[in-house]
Image (cartoon, rainbow over all chains, first blue to last red; front, side, top):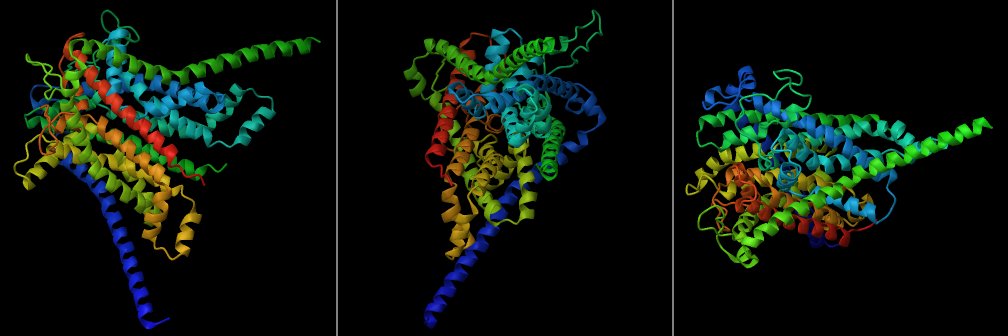
Length: 306
Length: 303
C-alpha cells in the first residue's frame, strides 16, 4: 500500500473516531438535560416551599390568607380517591389481564378487546374527565363526588394495570401450567394457585406505577368537578349525628393534592405560590411510589430465575 | 359405584364453577370495550347537540373562539392552532433529545451508566404534570424573559419546552427498547466491515429499529397533543389564532380544563363546547394511534 493512501485511511479513521467521541459527549449532554431538569425542579420547589412545610401545613384547611392555608382536605381527599380507584382498577385490571393471557381464544372478539386496551392507553387523560362528567356525574347521577373521581381515575389507569398484568403472566414459563394441568387441575385452579401468586410481584409493580400516575393526575378531576375550597373532612363511618353510613364519605365533594396545587399556582398573588409546596408533598409521594416500583422490579429481575 | 357418581357430580360443579369464573373474567376484559364505547357515545351525543346550534362550516372556518361571550364564535381552528404550536415546540425538544438519549443508552453507554440513567428517566416521566406546569410558570418563564424581555408572562414557548423535557423519557425508553431488540449479528456484521459505533448506530441499528422508533414518536406526538395541565397553567387563557410560540394561546385540552373550572350548567352551550373540543381532541389522538399502529405493521422487520 502506498504511503499517501495509508495516511488518507488513517485520517478517515481518526475523523470517524472523533465523531464517535462527539456523539458520546452529545448523548451524555442530552441525558443531563433530563437529569438537570429533575434536579432544578426539586431545588426550585424546595427553596420556595420548604419553609411552609410543617405539621401545621399538613393539618390545616385551605384559607384565604396564604400563610395559614394547609392541605388537610387535599391529602385526605387524595387518599380516599385512591382508595376508590384501587378497589376498582386492581380487580378489574388483573382479571382482564388474566383473561387475555390464560383464557382468551384467538378470535375477533379477543382482537377487539386487545385493540381497545392499547387504544385506551393513548387516549388523553382529559377525555376520561369528559367521560366521567357525562357518564358518572350526569347519566348515573353520582354527582361531583369522591366516588366519581375515583371511578374516573380507575378507568384511566385500567390499561396500565392490564398491560403490566399480562407482561407479568407472560413471564411465567409454560411448564408451570403443564405441570398443574398434568395433576388434574382446572384452568381456574391453575390460575388461582399458580399463575396469580407467581406473577403477583410483577403485577404489584405495575399497580404502584398506575397508582402513582393516578395520584398526580389533575386534568380529568378538574373536568369532573373538583372543588378547590373545602374546609371540612368527609364523614367517618358510624360517627356523627345522625350516624354516617359506611360509604357516605364517597358521596362527598372532593379535592385532591394536585387540584389544590393548581389552585394556588393559578392565583396571581405570589404569596400563594409558596403554598405550592403542596407540590413537594405530591412529588415526594409520586417519586416515592415510582422508586418503590423500580426497586421492586430490580429485585424481581435479580431473584427470579425460572 | 357411589364413588364414581360422587366424582361425576363434583366434576359437574367444577365445570359450572369454571364456566362462571371464565364469564366473570371475560366481563372484566370487556370493560375496556365498554369504556371506549362510553367515550365515543358521550362525546358524540353531546357534540350532536352542539352542532344543532353551530354549523360544521362555522366550526371549521371561523377564526374566533369566544363561546362564552355575548357575541359567540365557535372556530375550533383557534384551539387547534394552539394545540399544534405547543406540540410542535414540545416535539422539537423531545424528539431529538429522546432519540439521542435512546441511541446513546442502547449503543454507547456502559452497563453501569445505563442502569443508573434509566430509573432517573423513569422518575422524570412519573412526575405529575401539574408540577411541571408550576415549574414552567414560576421558573422557566422568568428565565426566558431574561433572554427575550418582550415575552408575555403566559406563553406557549415555556409550556412547550417543559412539556418537551417531560416527554423525553417516553421517547427514549420506547426507542431504546426497539433498538435493543435489534439482533447482535447485525451490529457484528457492521463492525466486521469496519463500521464505527456511530456508523453502526445510525446506519444499521436505527433503520432496523425504525418501526419501533416511529411508534415511539407517534406516542410522543399523541402525548403532546393531549397534554393539559402544563399548558393550562403556563400558556394563559386567551384563545388566539396564532402559530407564534411567543404568544399566549389555548389548546383543545386547556380550553376544556379552563372552562370546567367554572360551574357550567348542564345542557348549556358552554357545557356542550367542551365535548365538541373533546371530540376533536379524541379524533386527533385516535388518528395518530391508528397511524402509529399502521407504521409499526408496515415497517416491522422480522428477524
